[in-house]
Length: 135
Image (cartoon, rainbow, N blue to C red; front, side, top):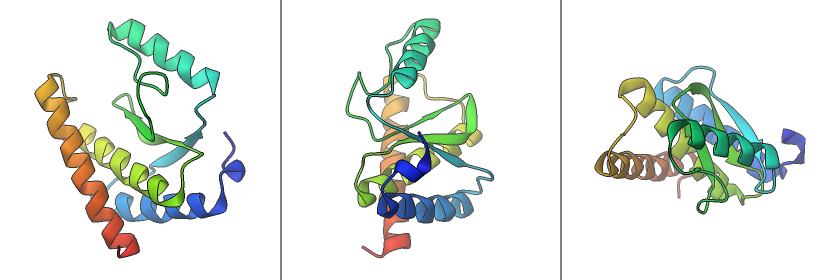
C-alpha cells in the first residue's frame, strides 16, 4: 500500500519510532511496508509460507494484527495502515525489536521461546514509546 494513503499522523509517529528504534537497536536500512487488513496478496503470501513451513498462517485472518516481521527479511517490517498513531508507533517498535532478535538469536522455536520473544518485544515497545514521545 502506498504510504501516501496512510493518515499523516500515523505515518509521522511510525517514522519517528523507526528512526529511534533503528538507532537504538543498531538496525540499518529498516523499512516499513504498509498493509491493510483487506489486502488479499498479503493473506495469500502468509498462507503459502505457513503451508511450506507446516504451520498456521500468522496474518490478519489468524489473530488481531498490528505488525509483522519475518526472519527471512531483516530489512522490513509490515505495519497496518489503519491504526491510530500511538498503536502505529508501538507496532513499529515491537516489530523492530523482533528484527533485532532475529539478528542476534535464532528464531524462537518452542512456545516458551515465543513467549519470551513476545514479552521482550512488548517491553521494548513501551520503553521506546516513552523515549520518543515521553508518555
